Length: 128
Ligand SMILES: [Zn+2]
Image 1 (cartoon, rainbow, N blue to C red):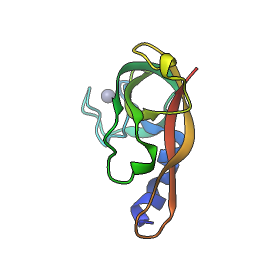
Image 2: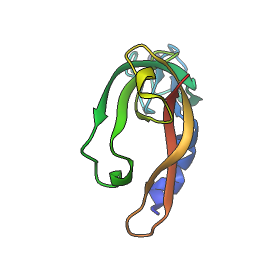
Image 3: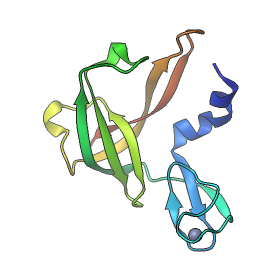
Image 4: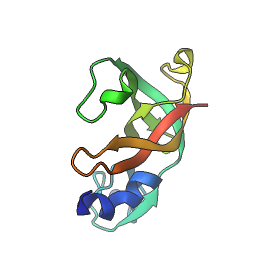
């Protein structure tokens, strides 16, 4: 497991993004400078746990590290504050996965690190 992962693991679990103290804009993933007004007065902000599916695809060809999970849904989700997240949709009936479907964040096993065998957890989404 990498040092990078341990440093950032809080973000994987909690969907932590950024908020601009000047204009109030929110971003995910986190930014160091506001993309709207350019301010560097940025604070961590936990993103909403709910949103809806903007678009999705069903992947049959697994990405490296995800072989055991294929096929699976990969979706762009618009969170309730307007930020967008690319995430898997899991634990959901096929017929419930569609554009506009309401989803919520859940913590699930994301992958197994090939070298160490360490299990890495992260957020995914399920339909509600
Ligand atoms: Zn700003």
